[in-house]
Length: 304
Figure 1 (cartoon, rainbow, N blue to C red):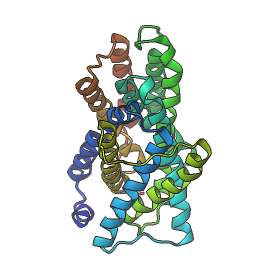
Figure 2 (cartoon, helix red, strand yellow; figure 1 turned 135 degrees about the vertical axis):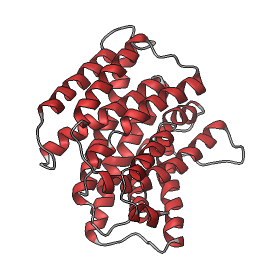
Figure 3 (spheres, rainbow, N blue to C red; figure 1 turned 180 degrees about the horizontal axis):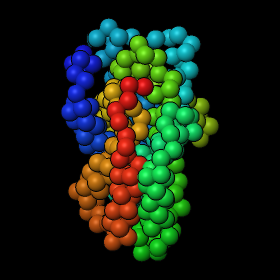
Protein backbone atom coordinates (compact mmCIF):
# COMPACT_ATOMS: atom_id res chain seq x y z
CA UNK A 1 0.00 0.00 0.00
CA UNK A 2 2.75 2.42 0.98
CA UNK A 3 4.59 1.52 -2.21
CA UNK A 4 1.55 2.51 -4.23
CA UNK A 5 1.45 5.86 -2.39
CA UNK A 6 5.01 6.62 -3.40
CA UNK A 7 4.53 5.73 -7.03
CA UNK A 8 1.34 7.68 -7.67
CA UNK A 9 2.18 11.39 -7.64
CA UNK A 10 -1.19 12.66 -8.90
CA UNK A 11 -3.08 15.12 -6.74
CA UNK A 12 -6.07 12.77 -6.55
CA UNK A 13 -4.27 10.25 -4.35
CA UNK A 14 -2.99 12.60 -1.62
CA UNK A 15 -6.30 14.48 -1.41
CA UNK A 16 -8.23 11.19 -1.17
CA UNK A 17 -5.85 10.23 1.63
CA UNK A 18 -6.48 13.62 3.23
CA UNK A 19 -10.25 13.07 3.23
CA UNK A 20 -9.85 9.61 4.77
CA UNK A 21 -7.49 10.97 7.44
CA UNK A 22 -9.96 13.76 8.27
CA UNK A 23 -12.82 11.27 8.56
CA UNK A 24 -11.05 9.06 11.09
CA UNK A 25 -9.34 11.76 13.18
CA UNK A 26 -12.63 13.64 13.56
CA UNK A 27 -14.06 10.59 15.37
CA UNK A 28 -11.50 10.90 18.17
CA UNK A 29 -13.09 14.02 19.71
CA UNK A 30 -16.22 12.04 20.55
CA UNK A 31 -14.28 8.90 21.53
CA UNK A 32 -12.15 10.98 23.92
CA UNK A 33 -15.25 12.21 25.69
CA UNK A 34 -16.72 8.72 25.95
CA UNK A 35 -13.52 7.29 27.44
CA UNK A 36 -12.99 10.04 30.03
CA UNK A 37 -16.61 10.18 31.15
CA UNK A 38 -16.42 6.39 31.64
CA UNK A 39 -13.71 6.96 34.22
CA UNK A 40 -10.37 6.40 32.45
CA UNK A 41 -7.81 8.86 33.96
CA UNK A 42 -6.58 11.47 31.46
CA UNK A 43 -2.84 10.75 31.59
CA UNK A 44 -3.38 6.99 31.58
CA UNK A 45 -5.63 7.37 28.53
CA UNK A 46 -2.92 9.32 26.67
CA UNK A 47 -0.24 6.79 27.71
CA UNK A 48 -2.21 3.76 26.51
CA UNK A 49 -3.22 5.50 23.29
CA UNK A 50 0.43 6.27 22.47
CA UNK A 51 1.76 2.88 23.60
CA UNK A 52 -0.95 1.01 21.69
CA UNK A 53 -0.28 2.99 18.50
CA UNK A 54 3.47 2.35 18.92
CA UNK A 55 2.90 -1.40 19.27
CA UNK A 56 0.54 -1.55 16.28
CA UNK A 57 2.96 0.29 14.01
CA UNK A 58 5.89 -1.77 15.35
CA UNK A 59 4.10 -4.94 14.24
CA UNK A 60 3.50 -3.32 10.83
CA UNK A 61 7.16 -2.24 10.69
CA UNK A 62 8.37 -5.79 11.42
CA UNK A 63 5.94 -7.25 8.89
CA UNK A 64 7.12 -4.85 6.17
CA UNK A 65 10.79 -4.95 7.25
CA UNK A 66 10.86 -1.22 7.94
CA UNK A 67 12.21 -1.05 11.50
CA UNK A 68 12.57 2.45 13.03
CA UNK A 69 16.01 4.01 12.74
CA UNK A 70 17.86 4.51 16.03
CA UNK A 71 20.29 7.13 14.72
CA UNK A 72 20.60 10.28 16.83
CA UNK A 73 18.98 12.58 14.23
CA UNK A 74 15.97 10.26 13.96
CA UNK A 75 15.64 9.88 17.73
CA UNK A 76 15.60 13.69 18.13
CA UNK A 77 12.74 13.87 15.62
CA UNK A 78 10.85 11.08 17.41
CA UNK A 79 11.21 12.86 20.74
CA UNK A 80 10.23 16.27 19.36
CA UNK A 81 7.15 15.02 17.53
CA UNK A 82 6.27 12.60 20.32
CA UNK A 83 6.13 15.54 22.73
CA UNK A 84 4.75 18.60 20.92
CA UNK A 85 2.94 16.71 18.15
CA UNK A 86 1.44 13.88 20.17
CA UNK A 87 1.60 13.73 23.98
CA UNK A 88 0.91 17.43 24.69
CA UNK A 89 -1.97 18.05 22.22
CA UNK A 90 -3.67 14.73 22.98
CA UNK A 91 -3.48 15.49 26.71
CA UNK A 92 -5.00 18.95 26.17
CA UNK A 93 -7.88 17.60 24.07
CA UNK A 94 -8.59 14.64 26.37
CA UNK A 95 -8.42 16.78 29.52
CA UNK A 96 -10.98 19.23 28.12
CA UNK A 97 -13.18 16.54 26.49
CA UNK A 98 -15.73 16.09 29.32
CA UNK A 99 -15.96 19.86 29.94
CA UNK A 100 -16.77 21.16 26.44
CA UNK A 101 -18.99 19.88 23.58
CA UNK A 102 -17.05 17.56 21.27
CA UNK A 103 -18.15 19.59 18.25
CA UNK A 104 -16.69 22.78 19.73
CA UNK A 105 -13.34 21.06 20.27
CA UNK A 106 -13.42 19.86 16.64
CA UNK A 107 -13.74 23.51 15.67
CA UNK A 108 -10.12 23.92 16.77
CA UNK A 109 -9.03 21.95 13.70
CA UNK A 110 -9.82 24.99 11.60
CA UNK A 111 -7.00 26.86 13.34
CA UNK A 112 -4.35 24.41 12.17
CA UNK A 113 -3.99 25.66 8.55
CA UNK A 114 -3.81 29.29 9.70
CA UNK A 115 -1.26 28.59 12.42
CA UNK A 116 0.76 26.32 10.12
CA UNK A 117 1.05 29.13 7.58
CA UNK A 118 2.19 31.61 10.25
CA UNK A 119 4.85 29.19 11.52
CA UNK A 120 5.93 28.31 7.96
CA UNK A 121 6.51 32.02 7.29
CA UNK A 122 8.52 32.37 10.50
CA UNK A 123 10.68 29.41 9.47
CA UNK A 124 11.00 30.86 5.93
CA UNK A 125 9.53 27.87 4.13
CA UNK A 126 6.68 30.09 2.90
CA UNK A 127 6.37 33.81 2.22
CA UNK A 128 4.01 36.58 3.30
CA UNK A 129 0.95 37.08 1.09
CA UNK A 130 -1.76 39.68 1.62
CA UNK A 131 -4.61 37.25 0.99
CA UNK A 132 -3.22 34.90 3.61
CA UNK A 133 -2.87 37.74 6.12
CA UNK A 134 -6.54 38.52 5.53
CA UNK A 135 -7.31 34.83 6.07
CA UNK A 136 -5.51 34.88 9.42
CA UNK A 137 -7.56 37.89 10.53
CA UNK A 138 -10.79 36.12 9.55
CA UNK A 139 -9.62 33.10 11.51
CA UNK A 140 -9.06 35.17 14.63
CA UNK A 141 -12.49 36.77 14.19
CA UNK A 142 -14.08 33.31 13.96
CA UNK A 143 -12.44 32.15 17.18
CA UNK A 144 -13.52 35.31 19.01
CA UNK A 145 -17.07 34.66 17.80
CA UNK A 146 -16.97 31.35 19.65
CA UNK A 147 -15.25 32.54 22.83
CA UNK A 148 -16.87 35.94 23.50
CA UNK A 149 -20.68 35.71 23.05
CA UNK A 150 -22.35 34.13 26.06
CA UNK A 151 -24.77 32.21 23.82
CA UNK A 152 -22.17 30.51 21.60
CA UNK A 153 -21.55 27.66 24.05
CA UNK A 154 -24.06 25.83 26.29
CA UNK A 155 -22.43 27.51 29.33
CA UNK A 156 -20.26 30.69 29.32
CA UNK A 157 -17.86 29.01 31.75
CA UNK A 158 -16.81 26.59 29.01
CA UNK A 159 -14.88 29.31 27.12
CA UNK A 160 -11.61 29.01 29.13
CA UNK A 161 -11.62 25.24 28.69
CA UNK A 162 -12.17 25.62 24.95
CA UNK A 163 -9.32 28.13 24.78
CA UNK A 164 -7.10 25.50 26.45
CA UNK A 165 -8.15 22.95 23.84
CA UNK A 166 -7.11 25.38 21.10
CA UNK A 167 -3.53 24.84 22.26
CA UNK A 168 -3.70 21.48 20.49
CA UNK A 169 -3.88 22.89 16.92
CA UNK A 170 -0.89 25.10 17.78
CA UNK A 171 1.05 21.96 18.73
CA UNK A 172 -0.09 20.18 15.56
CA UNK A 173 0.92 23.17 13.44
CA UNK A 174 4.38 23.22 14.99
CA UNK A 175 4.76 19.49 14.34
CA UNK A 176 3.60 19.86 10.71
CA UNK A 177 6.39 22.34 10.03
CA UNK A 178 8.94 20.32 12.03
CA UNK A 179 8.12 17.26 9.91
CA UNK A 180 8.64 19.26 6.72
CA UNK A 181 11.98 20.68 7.90
CA UNK A 182 13.53 17.89 9.98
CA UNK A 183 12.23 14.67 8.48
CA UNK A 184 15.07 12.70 6.82
CA UNK A 185 14.31 12.23 3.09
CA UNK A 186 14.76 8.45 3.31
CA UNK A 187 12.41 7.97 6.29
CA UNK A 188 9.20 5.97 5.84
CA UNK A 189 5.80 6.65 7.44
CA UNK A 190 5.36 3.37 9.37
CA UNK A 191 8.68 3.31 11.29
CA UNK A 192 8.46 7.09 11.79
CA UNK A 193 5.01 6.74 13.37
CA UNK A 194 6.27 3.90 15.55
CA UNK A 195 9.22 5.94 16.83
CA UNK A 196 7.08 9.01 17.53
CA UNK A 197 4.45 7.13 19.54
CA UNK A 198 7.09 5.12 21.40
CA UNK A 199 8.73 8.36 22.58
CA UNK A 200 5.32 9.86 23.39
CA UNK A 201 4.42 6.90 25.62
CA UNK A 202 7.81 7.13 27.37
CA UNK A 203 7.28 10.84 28.10
CA UNK A 204 3.89 10.03 29.67
CA UNK A 205 5.33 7.50 32.17
CA UNK A 206 6.80 10.09 34.60
CA UNK A 207 3.63 12.17 34.26
CA UNK A 208 1.53 9.20 35.34
CA UNK A 209 3.96 8.47 38.18
CA UNK A 210 3.78 12.02 39.55
CA UNK A 211 -0.01 12.28 39.23
CA UNK A 212 -0.67 8.63 40.23
CA UNK A 213 -2.91 8.33 37.18
CA UNK A 214 -2.34 4.56 36.89
CA UNK A 215 -4.93 2.50 35.07
CA UNK A 216 -5.01 -0.84 33.21
CA UNK A 217 -7.57 -2.74 31.17
CA UNK A 218 -9.60 -5.34 33.08
CA UNK A 219 -11.74 -8.27 32.05
CA UNK A 220 -14.92 -6.18 31.87
CA UNK A 221 -14.75 -4.10 28.69
CA UNK A 222 -16.69 -0.86 29.04
CA UNK A 223 -17.62 1.71 26.39
CA UNK A 224 -14.63 3.73 27.60
CA UNK A 225 -12.27 0.80 26.98
CA UNK A 226 -13.59 0.35 23.45
CA UNK A 227 -13.30 4.11 22.84
CA UNK A 228 -9.64 3.92 23.90
CA UNK A 229 -9.01 0.96 21.58
CA UNK A 230 -10.68 2.88 18.76
CA UNK A 231 -8.40 5.84 19.41
CA UNK A 232 -5.33 3.59 19.37
CA UNK A 233 -6.18 2.20 15.94
CA UNK A 234 -7.17 5.61 14.55
CA UNK A 235 -4.00 7.28 15.85
CA UNK A 236 -1.73 4.68 14.26
CA UNK A 237 -3.47 4.83 10.87
CA UNK A 238 -3.84 8.62 10.88
CA UNK A 239 -0.17 9.40 11.52
CA UNK A 240 1.06 6.90 8.92
CA UNK A 241 -1.13 8.70 6.40
CA UNK A 242 -0.18 12.14 7.77
CA UNK A 243 3.55 11.62 7.25
CA UNK A 244 2.99 10.52 3.67
CA UNK A 245 0.54 13.35 2.89
CA UNK A 246 2.93 15.98 4.29
CA UNK A 247 5.69 14.55 2.10
CA UNK A 248 3.45 14.78 -0.98
CA UNK A 249 1.63 18.08 -0.33
CA UNK A 250 3.70 19.98 2.21
CA UNK A 251 2.61 21.15 5.69
CA UNK A 252 0.28 24.00 4.71
CA UNK A 253 -1.87 21.99 2.33
CA UNK A 254 -1.91 19.04 4.74
CA UNK A 255 -3.30 21.34 7.42
CA UNK A 256 -6.42 21.89 5.29
CA UNK A 257 -7.58 18.72 6.98
CA UNK A 258 -9.22 21.29 9.27
CA UNK A 259 -11.84 21.99 6.58
CA UNK A 260 -13.14 18.46 6.58
CA UNK A 261 -12.28 17.39 10.12
CA UNK A 262 -14.35 20.17 11.67
CA UNK A 263 -17.53 19.33 9.76
CA UNK A 264 -17.07 15.61 10.30
CA UNK A 265 -16.33 16.20 13.98
CA UNK A 266 -19.58 18.13 14.34
CA UNK A 267 -21.37 15.25 12.63
CA UNK A 268 -19.91 12.62 14.97
CA UNK A 269 -20.76 14.79 18.00
CA UNK A 270 -24.36 15.09 16.81
CA UNK A 271 -24.54 11.33 16.24
CA UNK A 272 -23.01 10.30 19.58
CA UNK A 273 -24.26 13.02 21.93
CA UNK A 274 -27.08 14.76 20.08
CA UNK A 275 -25.15 18.05 20.11
CA UNK A 276 -26.70 20.89 18.11
CA UNK A 277 -24.27 23.78 17.50
CA UNK A 278 -25.55 27.29 18.25
CA UNK A 279 -26.00 29.88 15.52
CA UNK A 280 -22.81 31.55 16.81
CA UNK A 281 -20.86 28.36 16.18
CA UNK A 282 -22.20 28.08 12.61
CA UNK A 283 -21.34 31.74 11.99
CA UNK A 284 -17.83 31.11 13.35
CA UNK A 285 -17.44 28.08 11.06
CA UNK A 286 -18.43 30.18 8.03
CA UNK A 287 -15.90 32.90 8.93
CA UNK A 288 -13.17 30.35 9.70
CA UNK A 289 -13.75 28.57 6.40
CA UNK A 290 -13.46 31.90 4.58
CA UNK A 291 -10.18 32.45 6.39
CA UNK A 292 -9.01 28.95 5.46
CA UNK A 293 -9.89 29.59 1.82
CA UNK A 294 -7.82 32.77 1.75
CA UNK A 295 -4.87 31.16 3.55
CA UNK A 296 -4.75 28.21 1.17
CA UNK A 297 -5.87 29.88 -2.06
CA UNK A 298 -2.34 30.19 -3.44
CA UNK A 299 -0.98 26.99 -1.91
CA UNK A 300 0.67 24.45 -4.17
CA UNK A 301 1.73 20.90 -3.39
CA UNK A 302 5.23 20.83 -1.96
CA UNK A 303 7.89 18.17 -1.99
CA UNK A 304 9.49 19.43 1.21
